Length: 160
Image (cartoon, rainbow, N blue to C red; front, side, top):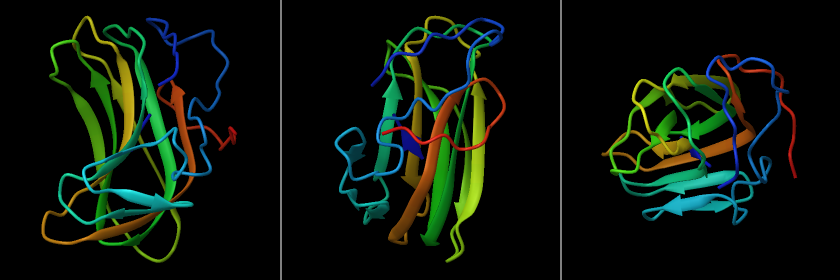
């Protein structure tokens, strides 16, 4: 999954805003804007997940209410299985999420996932790429990463 801090204002109906990529360093997951959790590492756009708890992410830490949505998308390729997830950040440490599990191949393939908040008093969204198979190391190339408000994944817009 792709986990993402920057500000995000979400309207309750997700209407009337300009669509844009909210990820810092969207073209380079080894950049410090991307948090590497567990034993995860990244070189350029290639993430290595040796253990089951590994992930890379950026967090959008701003209030989000019931009905607010965000969509993460990326081209993924590699070996093993990974998960692209959008999850909420909660003050109590609990979280809700929507994810898609991807069996990686050598061909870059575009994936997206959308999450709509169902609980009140959330602190925002996190987009995450995580290892999904506890018994297998995973190497994943992440390109054209994007995180945006709303329920539709739009054409990739790079962000430095």
